[in-house]
Length: 233
Image (cartoon, helix red, strand yellow):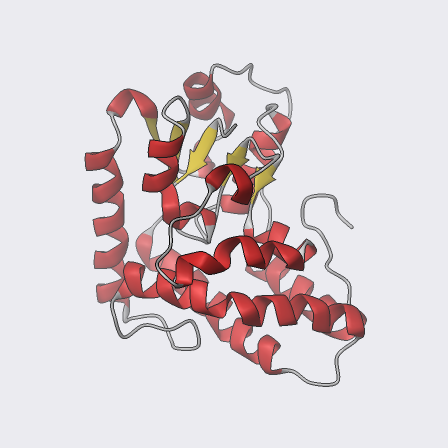
């Protein structure tokens, strides 16, 4: 049963949120990292590329929360499927978000096109290649009909408009008492107040920045190891 639904775009602190939610007892939290570590999960998402409804009890079986794409694209459907769940919309400065998304997209296609990789890396990347139709569908919905994950992000002015439109759409759709619009720089207090959790006596997590993502991709393609930003492994 899902308790917390993430509605934010990637690169809005979703990895930090995964760590924070799991620290607060709302884990495990579904994140793109789950697909990297469990390539068989791709099959759960493929019906969406064909326009078919997803069975959320199957897709998110065993998880209490979800953040990041592909899960966060379907915030509306999850909010309907789990009416008692709360929704967290992660946000950040739109221009800085666009820069971070561009870096992620620029690295992704090069990684997927790599050859001569270790077997473990090929298994992970093969799964991500199979997920591409789902990610392209999500990208078109988010950034316009011409978008594909192998393309650059729209110019900053256009990307900012898409970001702000998404934020406003979530605000209009989800009842205020059920929604937290959250910048991870705000720390524990607003998140814990919203979820009715005790504030931990430790810093709020700060994970998976651009350098950490590049390091993870480099280790994957050279060693065949998915180095977890959540465990330090």
